[in-house]
Length: 125
Image (tube, rainbow, N blue to C red):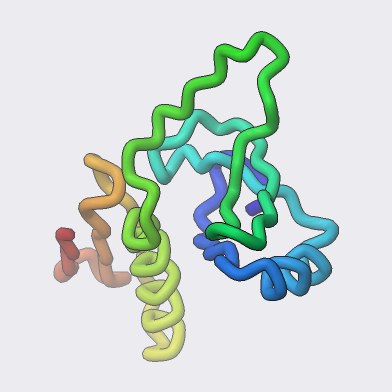
């Protein structure tokens, strides 16, 4: 949400009635094929369906040559973004300073380093 490099994970509602509310809530926001999700960084739109699951979709390419490189498309493919967000909130809640970083391969590793640099935690998917 907001840019191709955003770290904000977002789940699009699957049902049409919920998508209407989502669109109203996010009327000023933009959505992107996130680089941190393995995407190309192109802007996305929402697709509303009543006969199948609603989803994000790339804007049509005028050349018809658009190919999305994102391999993982399920909800779990953004787990590393949720883990990073939760780890930052946890550090703040515990009154700790520190850093939370995503590592390669993207989607697999989140590193948490405490303020003194003597200890850390690596979460591997």
